[in-house]
Image 1 (cartoon, rainbow, N blue to C red):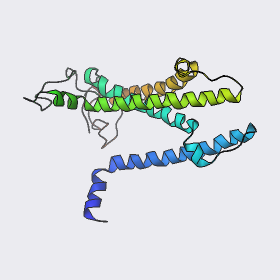
Image 2 (spheres, rainbow, N blue to C red):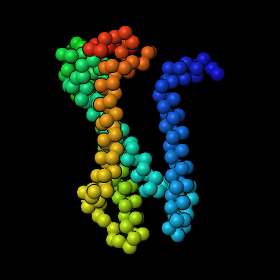
Image 3 (tube, helix red, strand yellow):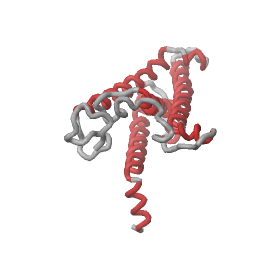
Image 4 (cartoon, one colour):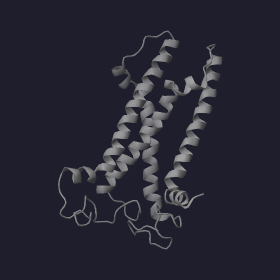
Length: 217
């Protein structure tokens, strides 16, 4: 292994590891979902489909997008809300009294003005928000197609897209994912006040007092 490659892997270990886990989990979801889908097809006396057709189907797309949109919503809201909201004692929060967008000096942009600076100043939440909107839209489309396919199998008429967006089915699948993400963020914010993980930037130092806010290890 060359020194340049070794350095790249070392410097990007966190991102590369989670991307690897993501692809492994996605493949696992595709394979298990494919077998489950065909099992249900057989149970209902319908023909099975190929793996290639399954991973391009609305059934698989809806399952993937439901999770993506909720994850990106979680991070978009967390990035935005931690600008203004605080949690005493949590390393996930800025120190008390430091809420807000901070001064130009604190943000290291003294004397810099203009559209590009303003855009870059909000680029993280903007991109995360766009990914959330895009994945939520994709969820609505794939979910709509899947929902109507199920209606066809029961000799029912297709539901227009607008009607589907207002349906209980769409919002049930949406809230099902949102509630778990919001609970996870709230749990992390408050549990990190009292619990520690030595060496993690998501934790305060082991010996830090509980009321130390914004202190990382």
